[in-house]
Length: 164
Image (cartoon, rainbow, N blue to C red; front, side):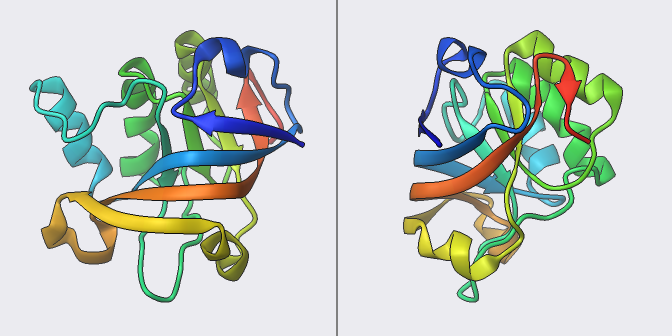
């Protein structure tokens, strides 16, 4: 397993292949249906609440019960992926099959899609700290920053190819 520090760089991700197992270490942002379209609008208007260069975003909500991936191919989530990749997000974490055009957009941006096991207890045990960064009014769907260590994933889309 390869450890990937986040934020990352396109050079670091270039050697990854479909099916590679990775462990993420560092900061991961979270967002899903309610927050990702708002984040896209904020970036487009030059008022992003976070620096997205080299970032990782997990498609999840954050609650005291833990975290687990939501389906990345939901309309509001998948439509945000190409734009956020072009804005610097290099690692998109979730579950489900993505459209061919989304996979192509990831490739164009040098970004990857990583699936994680939908096991809340395992993923939550890898979160060292969490804090709300923006959109607090969205509750557990707010934009969070998680500090993670040993956060498991499998590369599902990279370099224009998909495992699914």
